[in-house]
Amino acid sequence: MRREEPSHGMFVGFPTYTVKDTAGDAHHLEVTIPEGERFGFWPGSDSTYIVSGRWEAIEPVEDHGHPRDAAERTWFYDKDGKFAGWINAGHITETSNFDGMLFRDANDRVIAVTKNYLVTRVEQFTWPDGSMARPFKLFADLHLGFFVRGKNLTLAKWSDWS
Image (cartoon, rainbow, N blue to C red; front, side):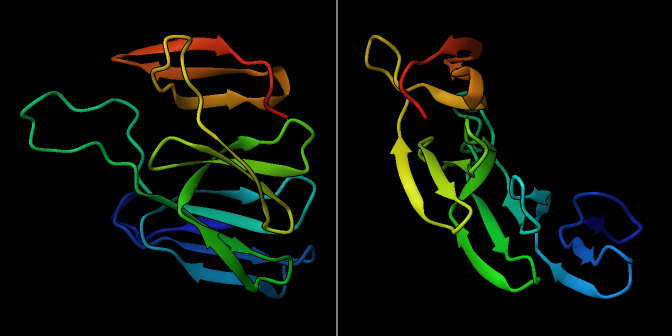
């Protein structure tokens, strides 16, 4: 998979993503996604995903005039490069058994999606006091992750996410 952007640099807003066959000849996918920044393959698959938009972990300071940006979307393309769907959330990691991926939406919920693009679980992490834990980076196989707590990044473990 290849990502190209106009020569005047990153963040100009309109990168093109290309996937070619193993011989490097035919294009299986060639698409331009505005604000696309992260991309990759589904675990153990030739299907691809492209994340667009921005996600900021920390709330801006009061009276800053700039609200926290959490509007990420992920676009899915099958192994033949055909559009397969999208989710109003950004990719955060793979599931613990690598049969799907986890996504974080604008409300900081974690959504499990299978390779067949089915949502199997939606989870909201909370701290022991009941306040919301904003996921930053998860390691699902270890049940460990970094979460935003106030203005701090906290390493925490959970017990029941599969």
